Length: 324
Image (cartoon, rainbow, N blue to C red; front, side, top):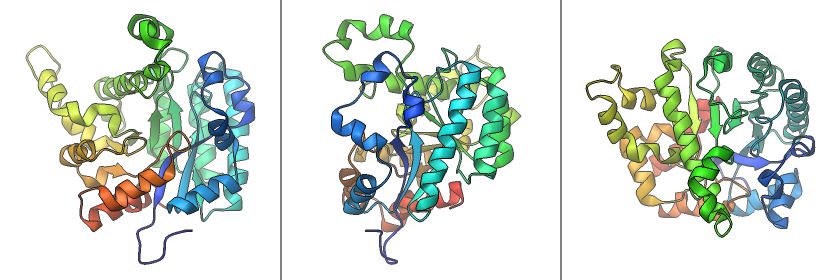
């Protein structure tokens, strides 16, 4: 059941679902990802989801569609499918606004359409921001044609959550194909997700988008896709002679938030706290790809932080960032 008033509110902000109209457009490996129990949970909008939240002590889920959502569709189809998915998610969230909130699906193949859908989802449906998954038909989101999305996010004062998807086929062929048959997880959470999403985050910093939109906020899951661990080295390398003058570390720490989704490691979390500060870290589980109970138990019982810092990560930071 939800936490009592004496306990911090537990808000999990990378918690997935599937919409059948969206998944009807999935192809290739995206169709086959997941066991029967996992797929059941992704499609569940109701009793099973709430039961597992209650058993673990998760008060609120900020729901988001699973990868690759609409990032691989043609522009016209993406706009239509994203609008329908967001309307249906709104209908569900509205039945239990005390337990659920939402990030929008964005039709990034149509950048202006995506910006408009973000505005509609935030202003008309009450969504807290948006989540995008991997590359958009092979393109990184730092390309200037996508900047209307970031411009609109800044104007609305909502974050964009950059989530992984299965990597570009050329990357799979070059990096992973020798081991993908025996270790399919290498393409996803085992390594492929991390490399592609971290690269997208780095490219955003280098692109100048944060100079153009100085109040833009980006969220990365899985404890920042490894970037906090490498932050000092990236910053030092980019400060050497021959690079354009900038402070990668300062820009990253000013504009990025990270979440605990699917990465319940004390050493990794403490590294992130030391590099970015506790105010930039938000709790998430990555349900149903990861179970709720281990994540909540880890943060409440095992993480070596004071209760005030734990309360910030468990829900306080999300309340501030998402204005909940």
